[in-house]
Image (cartoon, rainbow, N blue to C red; front, side, top):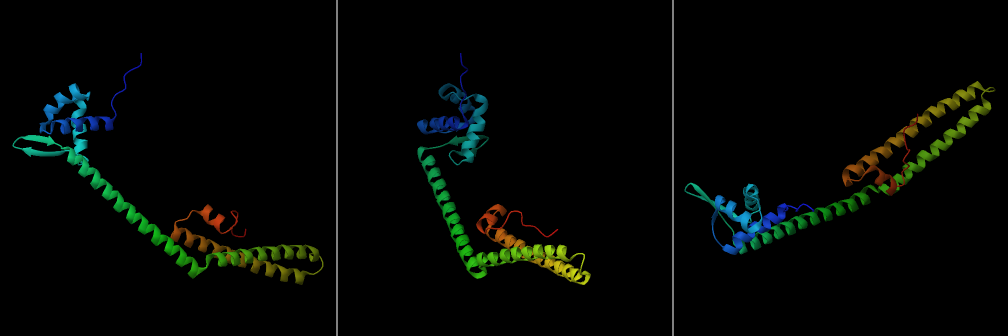
Length: 205
């Protein structure tokens, strides 16, 4: 025989509200602790917590009169609370829409001003060309390694300059990625995919 499932928090709140709305009366906590278990199946130990949750949600009002605290809620109270919640959500949605529109406008402006796509293409193209030239120089060095020490020294100097140039252009790409990431809140893999930046791009070792 399966064990009977207990009431969820939302079910308890709904049933507790029914007590208020059906009676349209005022209650002390000790009265609710007697009524709720019998009429709504809410355990006495959880009554205080459920009532306080409804108060926090502005679905039940409470007031201390003398030494006693009274609770009450009318059907119109729930309707008003839902309407207020709806208005709050509409306002929040409107603010989000404004922020989204502003961000989209900023992206358009920044892309037009900085032209990141064109600059990115130039940077990557330059790095690739420098790497190809470096490989060609390596082969040239190998060819003349034993026959022309002066020429080899010249090639070594050019290689050092090329390595420095590769690192400079690589640094420019990293700066551009950092700017796009911080300005448009984009992840690295999204930036690399959007602008065709190689994932293994790194400084020359």
